[in-house]
Image 1 (cartoon, helix red, strand yellow):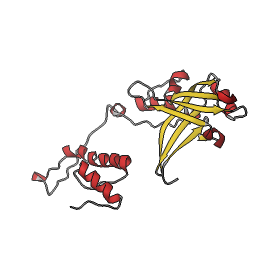
Image 2 (cartoon, rainbow, N blue to C red):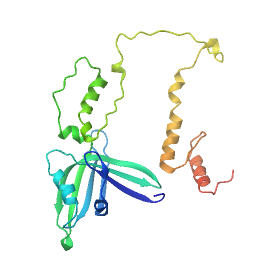
Image 3 (cartoon, rainbow, N blue to C red):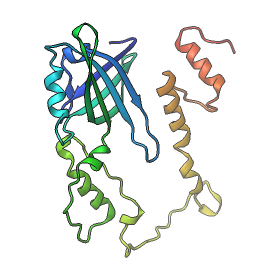
Image 4 (cartoon, helix red, strand yellow):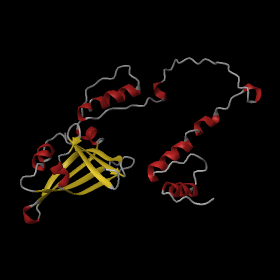
Length: 228
């Protein structure tokens, strides 16, 4: 699909595309984005005819004590796919409907709910740095398709680390010195340009990244550039 908006559903312990009957029976989808300590969540409403495969797909797994049913919602806008929620079902219920067609309400939270609902304690962490401990904690949930990615912190640096100075003169600087303070600012402008491209689909390659520059790029992309 190259235009418009399309919603795709992936389900299962290791998510796979949902059957066509499941996708076509979806009548309402709501996603709430959490912040801070609040978990993100979703609510899906399906029509539930008498012979719908949803009776087996969701009710059997959703009624279990373990939230094995993982749900991933992916929105494709103008050919660009974006995952809006990756979570697990926490509640499944049915509601009566009209004409003999009931409704199936599937509610869930993001993948962090796994660590709240399923505890896998008892693993020791002898002489391990913090990042390795986190990796072991997350590795226990690999059976649910959760692939851990841990970024080491400053606490993982050995205490007895040795520093060695290497002399290297910079010919263009005073007294052969090099600037180091501005290095942390190099990625700011590209990061903002990436955000603009993700939001409106145009790439800015020159500063300043102003509203006028964005508008000019949009007009140029539409084949109607503004005059200078």
